[in-house]
Amino acid sequence: MESQSQTQTSPPETPKRSPFTGIFHKLKTNLVFRSKLAEVNGAMGDLGTYIPIVLALTLAKDLDLGTTLIFTGIYNAVTGAVYGVPMPVQPMKSIAAVAISSTAEEFGIPEIMAAGICTGGILFVLGISGLMQFVFNVIPLSVVRGIQLSQGLAFAMSAVKYVRKEQNFSKSKSVGDRPWFGLDGLVLALACVLFIVLVNGDGEQEEEEERNGSRRRWVWIRKVVSNVPSALLIFLLGVVLAFIRKPSIVHDIKFGPSKIKLVRMDKEAWKNGFLKGTIPQLPLSVLNSVVAVCKLSHDLFPEKKFSATSVSMTVGLMNMVGCWFGAMPTCHGAGGLAGQYKFGGRSGGCVALLGVAKLVLGLVLGGSLVGIMEKFPVGVLGALLLFAGIELAMAARDMNTKGDAFVMLVCTAVSLGSNAAIGFVAGIVLYVVLWMRNYARVKPTGLPLQVDQHP
Image (tube, rainbow, N blue to C red; front, top):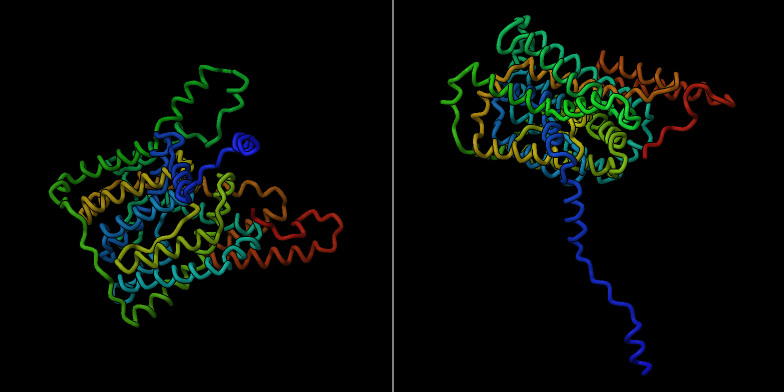
């Protein structure tokens, strides 16, 4: 009887949970679309940065576009699944700038790839050693905001240049005023800008009006308009106009992927790649691709938890793999994240979808996409890039004290006048000097006495 009662009252055994169950659940959560149309629209948010740099490297340095699309597509899909936010994959801008401004003999494909591998290797070591997380924790928020503001304004000024001036991407320079009318005219670009403002507004939600029930019909109309995929429609318009501008593009299309092969890099390529490419790129990657991205991601998605360590390691791994095969050096970027968020990206599914599209295009059309990209209206790209830059700059609006705003604006000014690394040093020095000046005060009115700690 006793053994029978024990058998009857014993709790049921808890089924063993497979370790893969948690992984699959996380992937499903990270990749699920919050709103299908908005996520598709958000995927277009960083193309204003991606396309011009990739096109410039393809035209000026004979970068293999098909290989780059395949690898960046894989990167997009993986980062979307891992992080669950619209984490962008963008070109390493400093390396691209050096390559475009140099001759092929001075800084060609071997040097570009060597610079990417060296930068990625250093970022991976910084991440796996924990040093990147330490850097992230001790950098004052006002300095981070200064870097974000400078990058956002730099994107916005480049966008205005794309809208106003015709561009020669192979030489990375403007070649004259853009005509008012035409398939890549000033009127078209301005119309795209106004269309985005009409659809997306300033990004604020109409929650208060909905809560109060005031002007319900007007609120309903604005909700319908805000669901229009503005970035997607503008991108598709650009593709259609590219074919209209040069109908013979159809005959230039060749099906099939590019032949992937190892890039040969001699000692001179490694040396020049490191000195001319890695050294100027590394500060920008640390500040904008890791620190600023993590801070902006926490601002936009506080429920998502990932560290500067993991972001640094993924940037490192991307380049330690892809650059050996001729794929463009890539990183994450706060500007791309801001752009995708601006246009509706809210999950990892946003960038995963973009990654699948890049992968399919790379496998099906390969390098023949160059002709389409070359005729894509640059003014339309400027419209997309403008709002990505403004959204990134908007992150700086939380600097409420005069001391924080002072540090941020000095850091921004120096960054725009020189580069992000010098701006960062100026911001840190200024922050420390002001902290020392205010240290003896009982109730400081400027900067806080403790270094800002990022969650």
